[in-house]
Length: 527
Image (cartoon, rainbow, N blue to C red):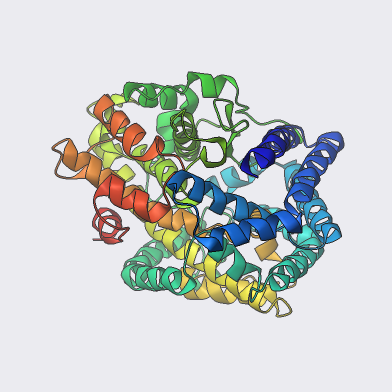
């Protein structure tokens, strides 16, 4: 059964990955049509109920003792599970998801009759002192939510139909179980994080508000969601006169990133050679890393600009890339990838955070000694702020998706802004007729995923603490591991090489010596 499945599955998944990549970098109708065809072929393979029932019966029999075969069986069963709906239903979901992604790829924010890219919108939000211009830029981007609103509503309805047909309460619950989480356990972690970050975040928000009131010359009552220097208030604004972006003028984040990875013995030149790194019309405005063949055809998509945000993003995506690259060559195809979404996101976030480290500024960026203390202090401040802000944003995403799939007929924009008020302390815009929730691509095209970023942050802090301890470094906040091939080897052997042979709980204990905990995250970013 396994060998027959692999013979059919492997070429289909490689073609689907290639088609998805091509669609992302061109935005063309032909490439999106190829993507739909490839994904439909995979869905058809996994819709075979007889094979699915055989897999389930084999899993329940307990007759397989070999741990690798048992893990492969689990992966196969989950591949089939979501596609046990009516084939026409699966095809419609795939069609809608591709249509929505194409809308995002081609959307441009219209501001005073100019069509702006996402990078250009973000530049306005981070630099302008004109409230009306900031509002127009923010609103121009949020307009994509209106474009996808109806398709998202249909996707939610169809995804729920699939989940309920398989015995789950809704799509959210199904996805959580497929991702090897217990829903109560997951929300207990997020409730703990809420308690941990609520007051520190509130203090930070007051500081940000005071800064924006002065910057824009407005009263506190006039603050809007466009006064955060970010589209969704998921990143930290610059406060004061020190801007990390100034360090990247005439610098290439891609070259700097390669320099750092290679100093740790983690080669990325081949990944970058296959990647698509800069803006062009029709291309996805976001960033991601993909492994086309579950071997060495690893590629990164970015839209790089010379600033601190893209330095972080390039490092983040190459973190995914080296994880994929150094999975053991003997790990079978079905398990040839990260142990879990949270482990690969954790590694990516670890590397992204290292770009805000004093040692990174000194040894990779080579900031002059006279300027280093000033920029290092801002890097520390901005990283802590970013992590606090992101933790509150992740609360919104997780709780919004649970509520949306539980009760899709409610006023979703009101729900969105109620949660943003509760967790981000943001007041809604006066115009509530839009679909601002739909402007976040993950809500539409990468559903029930975002909590993995936050859990990845916990994993990241725990891994960094363990690696530093083994190097004899008391505080992981003092190092970016530049030049430390020992750290590169630690990551390769403890985390990358096993691939998906172990579940995320087992991998965490094996790599760090203890189960996943928030204490290292708290020590690094909250205390």
